[in-house]
Length: 434
Image (cartoon, rainbow, N blue to C red):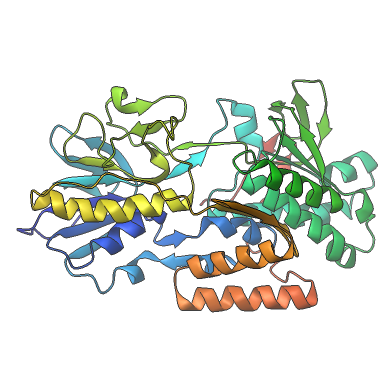
C-alpha cells in the first residue's frame, strides 16, 4: 500500500462519508499518522442525491475530492481501495491493493440499501445511495420518456411513465416531490406528444404514515403537500415482489411499472472479520459502547450509520443520519488523542438538532427539538442548512446558483443522459460498469 513507517500511532479510517471526514478533520496535524481509505476518491453529500437523480443538480456539485480535504494534513495518506477483511487478531486490514497494519482502526463505512433478502427486487429495482446510482436513475427516467414517445402500445406507454417509489422516509418523499414538479412544469414541455397527465407517481409506505421518524405534524403536512402535487400515497402496503414490470403487494394491489425506486430501508455496510457477538443482525450494524468502541475490542471503533450505541433513550441506536455521524466523528477524534495520552475518555451524548425534509418548491417540513413548522419558511430553512453543510465554497456557490436559476425559471437543465442505463427487457437489466 506504500504507506511509510512512522513512529507515531497509526489511525486507519475506513470510509470518507460524514463520520469519516468529521473524524479526519478532528485529527488534523495531531501526533498521529492518519490513513483514510475509501472506494471512491470523493465525499458525497447524500441528502442532495435526489436532485442529481431528477436533473436539478449535476453530480460534481455534491461531491468533493477527499484528497483536497486532507491535502494540508501532515503525515496523512489516502488510498483508493475496497477493504475485503479485517484481521483483528493481528491488527491488519486486507484490501484490494494490499495489507496494512494499524494501531487504531475506525469503521466509518456507512450504510447500504436493504432489500430484506428479496433478490428479485434487488435485481430489478433502482437504489439511490451513491452518485452513480443517482445518475442511473436520471438516465432511466429520461430514457423511459424517450421510449414512451416511440411505442404504440398503450399498456407499455403507461408502464414507462408510471413511477413507483417504495419507502416513505425522507429519500422517498423528496424524490416523489421532485418527480411531481418535473411532471408539473418540465416534462409536458419536453414531450408535447405525450399525455403527461397520465404519468403516475406512487409512493408506497409499509407503515401508517410517511416520515415516521419525524413528528406527526410534519408527517401530515408532508402528505398534504405531496397529494397537492398529484402524488398517490399508499400506506400500510408492503411490496412482496417485482419482476421488472409488475409489482405485487401483500394486499393483492398490483402496479404495472418499468421503474421501481427502492428507498424502503438501509443496513450497515459491514466489513468481514468482526466477531458475530459484536453485530446487530437485524440491521447489519456493529455494537459500540458510549465511546464508540466496538464491544469486545480495545483498539477498534465504529461511528456513523454502521454503529449501534444502545441506550435507554435510543434502544436501537441513533438515527442513521448525518448529524449523529458527524458528532460521533468529532468526539472520537478527541477521544483517540486522549486514549493515546492515557487520559479519561468522554462519553458520547447526541445533541438532536432536529430533522427536515423538502417536498418541492416552497414546501418543506422542519422538526426542531421544541418547535415544528412547514411551508415556505421551512423550505428556506432547509435550503440554508443544506447549503451551509456542503463541503467547499465552489460547491456551495454552484448549488446556490442552480437553485436560484431553477426557482426563477422553474426548470431543471441537468436532465441529460450522459451515461445511458439500458434495459434489454422488462426482466433483464444491465448497466454500465461503475
